[in-house]
Image 1 (cartoon, rainbow, N blue to C red):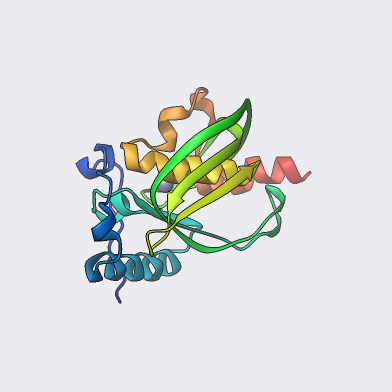
Image 2: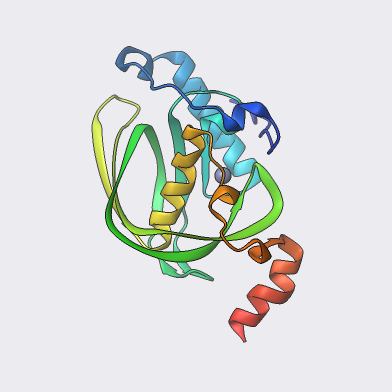
Length: 181
Ligand code: ZN
């Protein structure tokens, strides 16, 4: 296992569409090694999700791990570390809500993005078995953010008000402080 380098905005890989993994590839040593490296990388950099393109692998695979509990996003459900292969997202309710998002490939920034808040995700696990997740609220946002990476999209593409793209330090100083006040 090893920590891999997370590529940053401007690297062309982040703007390309990833390919689906074939069923026979999912159980391969290569994919298992990649996932082990991605887990190490996520833990080393600190974050709640990482998509394969962020470590320069153009395949439709992402990992998400949410500690849950009381956060600035409210009281959110936890999700143990889960691997999503070839995920498909279905929007169950188009009503949107906005959250301040950040991304390990866009370090130092935060941006306010509105997304649908009720989605269903169908994917495969590392054993190639189908798995289903239904997500609401902040978790729905997290999943859409991660899976956007598989289509070459970044959260900044969804920002409609450019005054709501700010540096993390200023976010903490002015936005979070304001919201807590
Ligand atoms: Zn991201």
